Image (cartoon, rainbow, N blue to C red):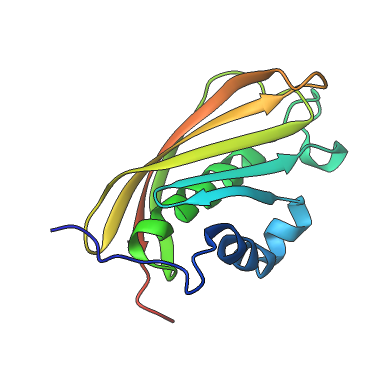
Length: 147
């Protein structure tokens, strides 16, 4: 059985997602921007400044983990409904993320009634907008059932 259809009231996925992101203080602290949201898809950008980096000049793994977690949840939420959380995720750090922006792109691979399995690839953009894959993640997004 597949998940029930979920759509924003006015059909504007990106506006809905940006409102959700704006309500997340940690996302605001990191300067995250949601640039794409559609059924089963999400893209989030995190600009890299000095406070996002490790001593070697690369993005801290926590920044990559945040980007993967949030983007996975946005992609899963478009399939399950707005009230979702990450149940688990695994991230594979492939190479140092050295650049100016982390770009996280997630897709929902499968969604049932209560959970979705999603994949997220993370890239880093340099000053010339060239991108390099730096990490990939797989996660399970579940309905939270309210608080």
